[in-house]
Amino acid sequence: MVTTPPAATNAAADKPFTAIDERLTPAVQAWLDAALAEAAEATAPAGHRRGLPAWELRFAEAGRRCGSETAADAARVLLLHTAGADAATAARLYRRGTADERRAVLLALPGLELAPEEGLPLVEDALRTSDTRLIAAAVGSYAAEHLAQHAWRHAVLKCLCTGVPAAAVAGLARRARGDAELARMLTDHTGECTAAGRPVPVDLYLVQALTAEAEEP
Amino acid sequence: MRIFDPHIHMTSRTTDDYEAMRAAGVRAVVEPSFWLGQPRTSPASFLDYFDSLLGWEPYRAAQYGIAHHCALALNPKEANDPRCVPVIDELPHYLVKDHVVAVGEIGYDSLTPAEDAAFAAQLQLAHDHGLPALVHTPHRDKLNGLRRTVDIVRESALPPERVLLDHLNETTAKEAKDSGAWLGFSVYPDTKMDVDRTVAVLKDFGTERVVVNSAADWGRSDPLTTRRVGDAMLRAGFSEDEADQVLWHNPVAFYGLSGRLNLDRGRPDAPYEGNTILRGGE
Image (tube, each protein chain N blue to C red):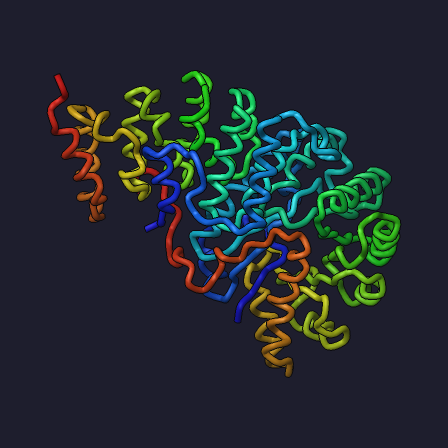
């Protein structure tokens, strides 16, 4: 099985970033403080990098500055939130981003003020990939809030098919409750697995149990 | 035997290759930007390619416990196509990214004025971004091309010890070494260098500042020639430390000049060994 980093799933599911959980070295802390100050200004140009705002350069280099992927994810999300990235900025950073940068934009979505027509194209792009870390980051609380039911059901099924833990899907119990169509899709998928002699993903039964719960009045 | 292939085009290779490479000892690769075997027609085509080198390809490599980094550039061949040249203006946005460890492949194909301009501009970009440069030396008019390459490097802001001159052979290695640059030998099944010639060159020029690569791509090539060179070195009397220097320490030292190498994903206990790329429905 492809292992999906727990950081991506925990962050995506229900906890918005407000700070970096792990202890940072003094050098990393100093880098982060300076980067966040630049993001708060969000205007200073970065010299020869041809008009790239300084904080966007920090956004790009977070991986090699922070020492761990978890810290880099958190630093990038904090930068996006501190800069108050608008829809155009978030889309540009996603579309011109590495996989790590794209994941950070997805993780930041719940804390950015993006209308569904602005943020959903990024979520849908990530859900089209086969990169499990992008898929896990795409099914966070922004998707739970805004993704249409058909696309959301396919996202859940894709998580099950690609080994992304169901725990990564924000709002799973609420949205799955009483969803007869999702239940049918899961039953059909169980049939496919059985026909092929492959194991049924363990989390499938968990999601199926959620669909069987009655909708709240 | 642990191997760092400092020049391989994995975009053109299958997961079977990744599996075989891992089994042969490959733990890290650098994939430089080159042409696709047919012409691109716009900068947008390059940007999709860069995205792949910064996203999908490292993900694929990680499934097999191989750390993937890349070098980005406008390649020498397409530097002659005015439709492609504007991608140089986009490069500064990409050269700042994690896992970009060099500017490359740059250099000469047919020794044209357009190649002069793209080569010089991109050596300057490497200097501006704190990156070393991977320089492709031409396959035709090779010695003359090597001399012109050395001249352009000398005129640039980038010191020669931050330049790797690649695709060298017996006719170009000495002048390349005298320039102060790193030496690269690409080992192919039936063009460029072969295993025995490479070992002979290593005997003549020593194992310092020398790297060996497969340069495997979409043509007839072999992603395991690095391992074959390592085995041949031991048979020829080189020590295990000398093989390790050429196949691991030297590429780590050269690309480490970027300050951006992250080899954790290629460590022997990486959790990805033996996995497959998963797609929906599999």
